[in-house]
Image 1 (cartoon, rainbow, N blue to C red):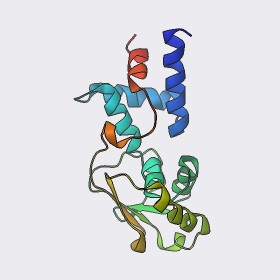
Image 2: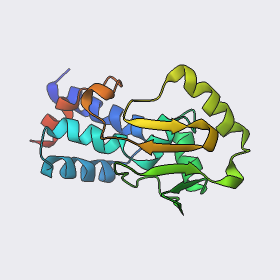
Image 3: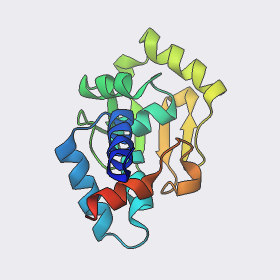
Image 4: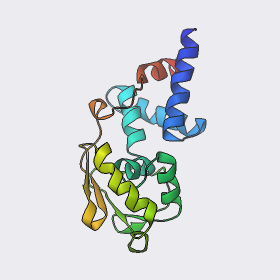
Length: 159
């Protein structure tokens, strides 16, 4: 397999993991490239801080696609305001809260029970009793356990 094919497969894998289209992925890459630091790590940090991914990581859903659907259906507040856009970039200190009317949804409660086994990343904090999560910090490469070779994606877009 050629290097180009390997790079392309890696990009497709990451796009599939985070459920995003090519145009949006390219925008994330351009933004990551303009940021200070390592481009590949910046890219993963941006993808991890998407609203739908943070809701999944906090345990409100069992998959990223389920999380995306819950966000689109308006089940969450960010800093007290209803938000239904999955691609919003969260900042350190943002508070994600399950809306009052959504706290009885069986799928969400089952997912919150399952998150105990999966674990919550250290850059996030979950208060299960009040259905709130907080972004404590920016995820670093060490925090992202998904097997991704971000350097291949950087090489692909650097051509």
